[in-house]
Picture: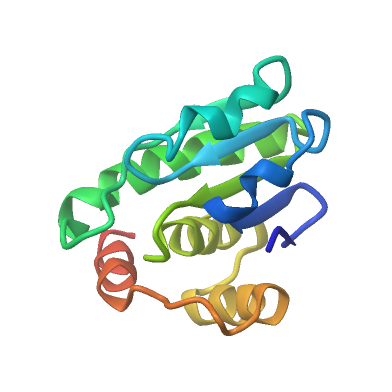
Length: 141
């Protein structure tokens, strides 16, 4: 499900990427380790800017936090210049959710609970939030 969080910030899982048209987003941000499948993005070659921030989908949360910070900074820079940004991950381990929570903290001034509640209200409670990744990210920020 591709979910609109704000006018410029969207979130999705990898399963939705084949449904994206080249003009839907200015920037697509992958916060997973590697692109899931180059063929998935073949139709987007002349479309949006594709940004990659390598985050693993297993218990390396402690090394993820610096990567999340770089991803958030880049996402905020794109949003500040008016770009429409989609953030996604692969594997259902909440990397896109935690990244978007951090973006919303900076963009909207939310605390962590407000950011989670906001995303849940838009994206639904179906996502599995990686509490360990969130806790490590909170400690660093």
